[in-house]
Figure 1: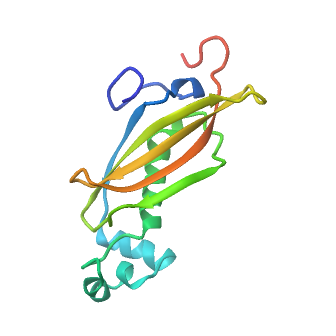
Figure 2: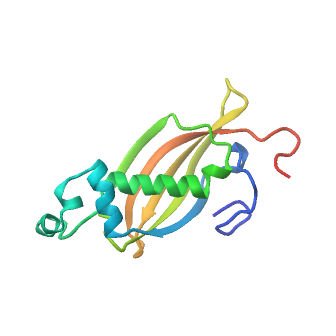
Length: 164
C-alpha cells in the first residue's frame, strides 16, 4: 500500500524517506500478447518454446511462453513507469535474486507489486539511502510467476519539507 493508502499517490516525487519496511506498492497490470512474446524472444532469447508454436506445443510447456527475461523486462518497465520516474532513484548496485516460478503465456495479465523489505540511510553519503525490495509479478489468477529481489539507491528529501 502506498503512503496515505490506496494504489495511486498524487505526489510529484518519492524520496528515500517515503519508503518503509513492509510497504507494498501496486504498480498496475498489463496483458501480454503472443506476438510480443515471439518478437522479444526472436531478438533476445530465440529458444524454440518462445518462438515456434509447433515446437512450443510439443515442449513441456504445451505452448508458447514468454522468455523469463521478457517477463523481467516488463516488470522493470512497470517499476519505472509506476515508481522510478517520479522518484529520486540513483540506480541500483545489483540484484540478489530472480526466480521464474510459472510461465507467462499469451493472453496473461501481468500484475506487479513492489514490496519494500528494508531501508537504510547511508552513513558515508548523507544525500542518499538504500531501499531493499522484492518485486512480485502475478498472473490474472493471482499465481506468482516471477520475483526479483534487489536494492536501489534513492536521494534524500531536501531539507525544509520536500515536494510542495
